Image 1 (cartoon, rainbow, N blue to C red):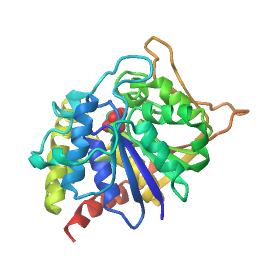
Image 2: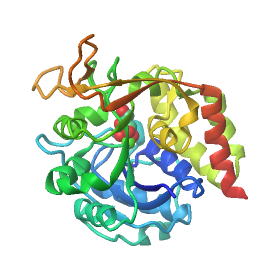
Image 3: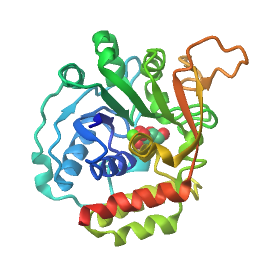
Length: 312
Ligand code: RIB
Ligand code: CA
């Protein structure tokens, strides 16, 4: 069975991604969820993870992690995810009771991975602060990491700035540590999540007909898409679902290229920019599989079916 740890900053698209992941116990054994400051501050991100795991009747262990990026102060994205970081649906009060196994995601992940009798996959849908600290603090753990599936970066446009995608921008030093680790990575960047694996408004509206979890998902996506539409987006990117689906349904992704990717750490308008080495004679290890296209209709259907499956 594929063992998985998900590191996230719910965050509405993280919530959809986690909902899809938990809908497929036949594909992935989720042995832990860790939180990191990103879309909103750590306290709210962790509270949102508790709400969602309770709502989905999950029993995976939860640990909170780093509140701030490695070097700079955190910049959040409340305008997209709302004041709570997961606006749009009133989760039951008891959600806050979900147990927290640890306040230290790094040692939590280290223990989970090193004690697992098979290699562990990491799905990372947030700034990579926890993952970078794990690799730097316990480099020996890399021997038991199978693959890292990341939503972050871009080979084309930015979103938080013209040059940088949000997760890369918040902690570029962490992303560089993870990219340079040599571990096999599958990357869902904005070039995929915005340009190819987007959802249309009518598809988002359809989700409300997919049972109790569908009502929740469509409610939070309703808030999220209104924020995206206000920005002028007509194609709604559910970014983090790509990272999860690249692990549990890789057949949906129809084109990819392996690159080495560098991350700008400069203190200027390029900070957090991710750029692949496209040189003909690129010498570095091309350890990052950049996803470049998807069967969009199949992607949307998979998301629908995952949400509907909670009704069975
Ligand atoms: O740029 C999109 C990414 O930043 C997503 O992971 C979203 O949840 C935010 O964390
Ligand atoms: Ca995220």
